[in-house]
Amino acid sequence: MTLSYDLYWSFRSPYSYMVTPRLLALEAEYDVVCNVRPVYPLAVRTPEFFDGRDPLWTRYLLTDVFREAAFLGLPFRWPRPDPVQQAPEVGYRMAQPWIHRLTHLGAAAAERGRGLAFLREASHTIWSGQVENWHEGDHLAHAAGRAGLDFAELAAAVDADPARHAAIVEQNQVAQREAGHWGVPMMVFDGEVFFGQDRFDQLKWRMDQRGLARR
Picture 1 (tube, rainbow, N blue to C red):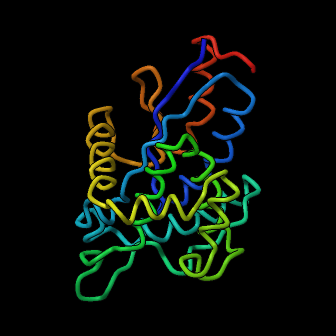
Picture 2: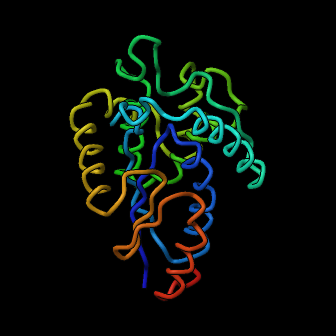
């Protein structure tokens, strides 16, 4: 029996980037399907979340993401540019064209059955530090091609109807909270929430209990 789970995932989340190779490997080796449901990052959904954060929170985050990437053997650098823009006067409360388009591209890729592959290739382009200015030139086109997608077709569909793709993302965000959490990466399997890339092993353990079978 094929198992399935929902994946709530953000292009601005380093931990989303880190879990994706393991989710791809899981799907390649086992009879399981990932329902990719991209969401906007907290900085866009609820920018007030970051107001007045203890400085230790940011310091620890920046220590942990580099450590975790090294532990997993993944190349890592904070994106240049950051997919979410901010300014001194307004913080994150400003137009966010990059992250909106990225998220809509992810939703469109999911509709075409290549969502997880696109998340992997696009996030590697953004977070690995191997690409400068990921938002320019043909970097995302190459990422889409590696994921088995026609980027020209994908981008044209997103640009022609951004409202429809925004509605898909909004629906994903409503479903995410209804499932029981708001953070990413978040996997929901059989009604149970697994929040964080460090819950991958528990996710697979639960799937094993439900009859996860090798392909």
